[in-house]
Image (cartoon, rainbow, N blue to C red; front, side, top):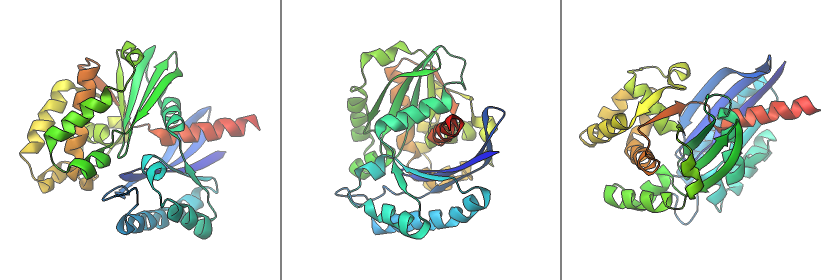
Length: 297
């Protein structure tokens, strides 16, 4: 039986997947998510000391769990790790303490892994995956179950928060500017699939889920009116009140408003009235790639 543990070190969250390869498919055995806010207060492309300490705490917390499950451990970093001039602190920490190499994904790899994770999850001939992260958003165009085209843009929730604070008008203007970088070919897709914490959290909130359920969130539908409703509702609420709606990840409350603005603008750009939520993020693509490589040996 093949097993793998995958860490997705994002700009805002660190997620962990424990998976097995069984009967030709990836089976989730356990999943964890913690807010590291690795990109918070990241100025001059330097990860803050407090953020590095949060990273260390989370890694130390879950490495033992992973090693009890398998010796195959992959730790992958995305936008924040690509940008950080002092990412060597993370590289050295993992190598010295755990003898694990830090795999910093390129935008192409990130988009490809999202495609691998979702290509067979949705029965659409052609659809567009968007993965909203803390530092960037990846758009992956899927046609006939294969990645046809992709683009990564510096449209990230933490990135916008660091630059503009709570200036919503400036944030909306920047979102629109960045979305203008997407080639016209991507508009061929009439179905949108959203990946990332904002999409999945809002799906859970809409369903009134108090304890997060991947099964209930994955493949669920969010309408344009749902996004507008929560944008308006959250404007009138404190972070504490928003957190009450998301007991499964309350720390996300401080930035979810920006994530909702990104979703809204993406739906407007592609004239979409609804999107599907996907809870299969790039961790699943990394796991699939690992198992495929093992099969070829």
